[in-house]
Image (tube, rainbow, N blue to C red; front, top):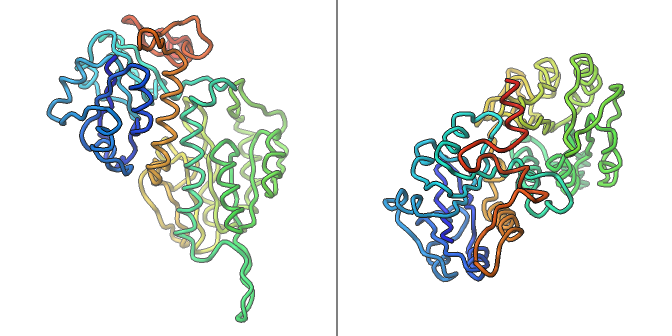
Amino acid sequence: MLICVPKETLAGENRVATIPDVAKKLIRKGAEIAVESGAGAGAGYNDQDYIDAGASVFDSSDRADIFGRSDIVLRLHKPSIEEVAQLKSGCIHISFLDPFNEHALIDAMAAQGVTSISMEMIPRSTRSQKMDALSSQANLAGYVMVIKAAEYLDRILPMMMTPAGTLKPAKVFIIGVGVAGLQAIATAKRLGARVTGFDTRAVVAEQVQSLGAKFLDIDLGETGQTKDGYAVALTPEQMEIQKQGQAAEIAESDIVITTAQLFGRKPPVIVGADAVAAMKPGSVVVDMAAENGGNVVGSKPGEVVTTDNGVKIIGTGNWANDVPRDASQMYAANLFNLLDDSWDDETGSFVLTFDHDILPGCVITHGGEIVNETIKNVRAGS
């Protein structure tokens, strides 16, 4: 099978879908790997690294031709509709796709006869953890957000005792304790900050405390999580209780990081303008969801905004891209594990079957139609 790894076209993207070590593993399994020239440069891999691993490198001018001959395309970001038209019928395209919102793209993939696999849709199960790219990239995002907040903060994070006096540790408040939130807590603690975490799922309190942080207990009444571990959306009344309960913590914090996202839906606004206005000048807010609508009033996707009272709101997004070498290594491993799980070593090919515990949940289009039940149900109800 010919596996194509194109260079990412999103402006500023440094990650790559396959690193040389993973390309070598796929070649050993019988695949032919074609990597676009310069695809790995942003992550520290040059063309010769891929050639030494046994892959071929193609020029960007040959991109459409390679697309038309590829059996599998591996990438991070979704393709353009124009690129979909270049794929041959039966090609397997694997990337993040945002299938809940990209209706025209999904329709184009179905019409082209492309089998599309969405990395967002990998089921949350024990067996699929090694394929869970959302979690691997979110883990790195949690680290990056703390480092970026520390860069913009006007003080240090740890307590420091000096002959000139004692500096108190900075206070960090993490709202949303999923994968990214837990890593943010762990990173802030390692840097010496006093950390508090909050989540609508009280069940995660023990995880927060195990990292040495305090859990902010706000009685929201009945809450819960989905079978995949995502927080259930709060009612408007519960949202108001949350905002009131966390107001004092936000006002006293030097850094506030929000990670609240609802899978397939617009993220909730959990930090209002009044909460930001009550923060100290020089404080920092990081909005992980800024690109998708935002958790924080005043955040702007791709930007750092300074408010009238001197608070910096960071919404730069694409967080894992700030550590592209590690992010590429993890994403490449996720893709390899997905392919390896259904790889036939005798024929040297990926075998797609719906008699499987993982693939039916993440395959969006196949055989000229939308086959994913979740996406079909969402579209039917919209």
